[in-house]
Image (tube, rainbow, N blue to C red):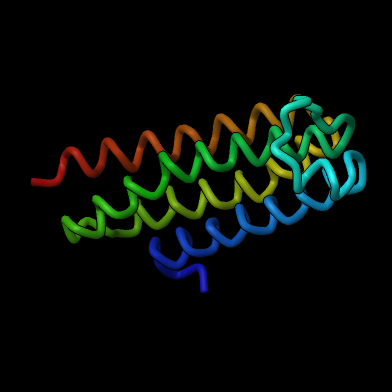
Length: 132
């Protein structure tokens, strides 16, 4: 399942979906279904672990918005190789660790795995640019 960059992109998309479900569940527990169904003009925000999961979700969506084009560019250029696979695996592994690290306030680890995932994404873009 983790043998191709496109599968890794799909797997990460599923992780973002799971994070969204976790965020919605936490917000519902704290803010109530009535507030979530409203226009949310009051601007209430979840706190504690529910708030951290919400922030992790926002960060995960940004990471997906950066990771997906790099993978799709490499696919369009037939640029997949062992190096791109390793970079994509590094990204997904880092993001899998990132979510619980953020939710559980493991700050040093959260920062380290965020940096690893971001560096892997930048590396994928550099590889995509270097392919004719």
